[in-house]
Amino acid sequence: MLYHSTSLSVFLHPELEPRTFEFPYQVGASLLLVVSAYFACVTIRRGSLLRYWWGRVARLLPSFLAAVVVSYYVLRAFPIEGWFFPLPEDLRANLLMLWHWKPQFYPFIDGSHWTVPLQLMGFTVAALLYRSWWGHGRRIVIVLWVAVLVPLAQWPIRIAEPIDETYRTVVDGVGMHRWHLFVAGVAIWMWSVKRLSTPHFAALLALCMAAQEVHNYTRTPEGLLADTGSSVAVAIGMCLIALVARSPDMAMPQPARRAISWFAGISYGTFLMHQAIGYIVLRKLQDVGVDTITQTLAMLVTGTLLGWVLTRAVEQPAHKLLMKPFKQGGGAARTRETKTVGPR
Image (cartoon, rainbow, N blue to C red; front, side, top):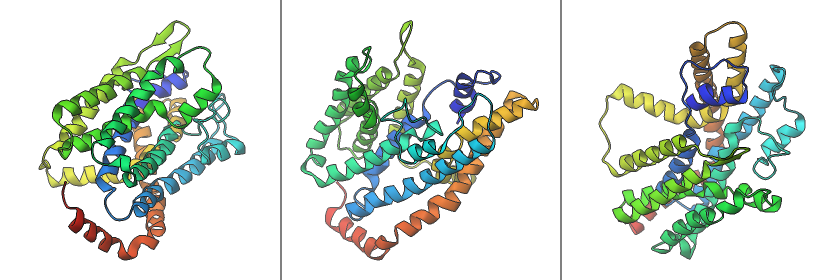
């Protein structure tokens, strides 16, 4: 939210005043994918694979669909001259998550939503791998290395000019240039439970960091432009996640624990709701003479409140409703699995 409110907002809308404080690092969404992959490993053995997969869909999809619809109507209700004004066909394309496949035809209603199809694909691949021969033992390590090395090997093709549109559609559609973030999350989990040696983990994580740096290069009229600051920030985030995953639970004051748990509980809704609507908040406040620090705080507060509402009104009840078919027998299935599998 800090990056969107203090840096990307001004980049996308130059008529906004420069922020007094700027956080210019693209780090949040990338680490979201790392954390998603880590917790996929933590939860995938709890009950049946169908329950695991459907639970992820039930958690992600209803909130996303609701966020798209709400953002669409807010952008239409508070239009700003020169800004994107979504049409009904844009709503349909966003609900179908078509942006990565044809970005020149399907603009984002809210740019933060790009992670949702990648998470859904990642959870699906995780379930299929876990069920298959390749999802266990040393074979999963081979899969992890291949998932990082193949996109890296294709990087020269990706930045070539002109790029073949069919190739671009496929690699962007399946999020190939983001696979290293999922690999990092899985590697962190394997290291945390001591299924990867520290040297092996360090080598694999370093490769993921290199892939993040390569991904952050963009082609400009002046040539390739790096965003090394963001790459370093993501690398630091990966290391912190790994240390927290491997370390014992930290003791902290109960009020701090409750506050962190509360915000973690609404973080997905906040992620979905803060950007597009937040930019309108910035512009409307600027138009009436509010200073930039207050504008930024207003965007953060608005995103948090909307995230809380989305969580309470959509995410939690929808998940509860969609998981009803698995309610009976779910606990028994987990108990049986714990007894038969045990710690590894």
